[in-house]
Length: 275
Image (cartoon, rainbow, N blue to C red; front, side, top):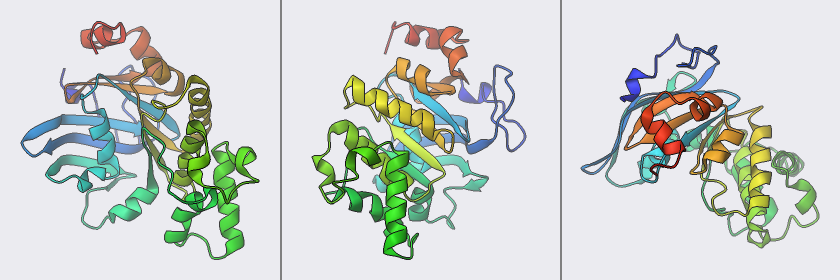
C-alpha cells in the first residue's frame, strides 16, 4: 500500500492518526521522501509525521529503509557520496534541506545515537562537554561543569561516574557507554533525538536501562527510534511505522498496530511470516 494513501495530512501542527485518535503536535513532518544512492532507490515517497514529546518507532526487515529515513532527518545522508534526497522534511515548519539551514546547527537540534556506543577517545567529562564547548553554549568552567552534570543525570549515569569523570569514556561498560553517548547528545539541549538500533549491541539488563531512559526522555523530546525488536517498539513507543521495501506500509498507534494491524503485510511481519 502506498504511504501517501495512509498518511492523511492534517492542518499544520497535528500528527495524522489513521485510527482516528486525536491529533497531537507534530515536531517533524516528512512528505514524499525518496532517497537514491546513485541509481539505487532506497526510499519511495515516504510521508510520516512525528509527534513532539513522544516516541515514534520505525520497524521492518533489514534493508527496508528505516535507517535511511532516520538519516534524512538530520541530513546525515549529506555525508554519503552519490546520495540524493527528494521531498520535504520540516522541523517546526522549517525545511531542513533549505540552503539557509546549516547542517552542523541542525545536528545540534537533532541529536543521534547509533547502533554501537561510540564515545570519543576522551574523558567522560570531555565526551559530554565537547558539544556545549564547540557550540559556545557556556561562558565559564563552572557553567560547563553544571551542563555536564545535568546531562549525565538526565542520562541516568551521574551516580555511576561522578567520582571518575577524568577516566576514559571507553573504560565504561557497553550500556554505560551508550548512556554516555545519550548524555553527549542531550548536553547541547536538542529538540529531537534519533536512535538507530540503540540496544542491538547491549545485554538485556543494559537494554532495560536504556528503555527506561527513553521513557523518561520522551517527556521532553521528540524521539524517533529504529528497532528490529518488535517487543522493544511495543514497550517504548506511542506510534509505530512499519517499513517494507522502501515504503511505509502502515502507521498507527503502537498498541493498535501490534494488536489489530490493518494491512496483511503488517500482520505477516509481526507474526514472523517474513523478516
